[in-house]
Length: 437
Ligand SMILES: *Cc1c(COP(=O)(O)O)cnc(C)c1O
Image 1: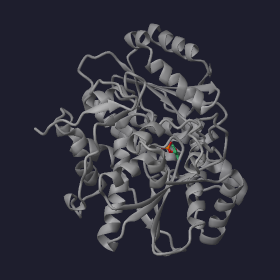
Image 2: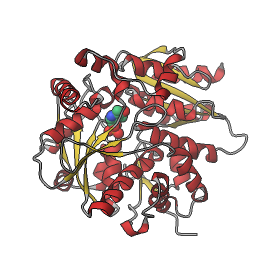
Image 3: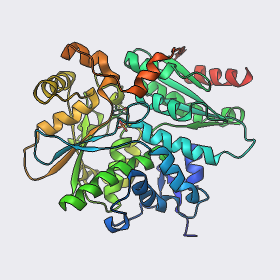
Image 4: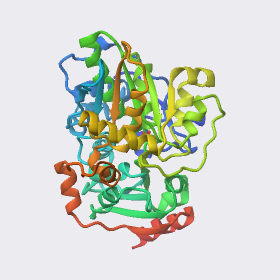
């Protein structure tokens, strides 16, 4: 067995954890985020040129699971979780431009990748007879649906979803509330940042944890971040084999989980060129990259609601990856587009190219449209299916996007969500009450 790779907290805690503990816990005991002691390095030649996405994932993630009890199950976990297409589709209107479509999973957003991987790990992590585990999910829309779909009816796991009431699209809200069984949705009278804080405060409460074993399925969980690396590796390696040039990515960015996965793949030595963070009118990240100090602030509501984040948690991991501001700013680009720009991009691409974009994907497309057309190869990362955001698209376009079958099936079910105040103690009380009940 190889030397195990150990994990530490971004807050410098001394406790070194193993990957099964990291995945089970979600958050490090000191409130920081788990990171590997060092990022493994791989060579493109390590990967099977004819492998599917799941095969790329196995090669990519094996070093992260080295020496761990979960290592033997990794091939099965990857094949169970990554069982849908993640195509890199050429964009006809521009030379060497592509779209990496991450929305062909059960909930029609890229969050399916991480959620399904996490669920597949938990199926193997839970000791027989263990008390039920409650997975907490703060969501600005898509995470909750993906986690609910991935864990729905999984024995020994309950899912509690917190979402900001009125700040997710009606279809997203429906998706969150339609599962039932072991899934409970709470609509919180506050912002996504409130939901995220409530989850963190519950996870950090040891007394509560003793009564109600908790874990988290947020993008702070490494068990979601790691599998997201596979589609960057897979698409960049495929491009590299055909074109012998690195592929650059434009990533719609909110909590920085998807973008960080891309950064780590490049740090591991795979052929990724530039990485551009496409943000909405929440300026925490773009202002930092423009040279301002890092200043978290309250989130503001935009058309790209899954990116309405003012205090992106994965910034801690980005800082761990590049400890110096100057270095970090040199590694990435970031820009912002407001709602007018998002709307204009959606309308222009529908009219000129018959291409429907969800509002998040539109932020990345807006960046591409502003780049000079040179020899660089760019992939616009498409994070959700446009049909999830019909309330944005229909008024702009005059028609509603066609609904993919998996989403249609969810929308036929009845949906319910309980209201909750945006207060840590109220939430903790709710959790205790649930267990007593
Ligand atoms: C979550 C989400 C994002 C933002 O991803 P982060 O990992 O939080 O940066 C972008 N687009 C969609 C559709 C999402 O659901």
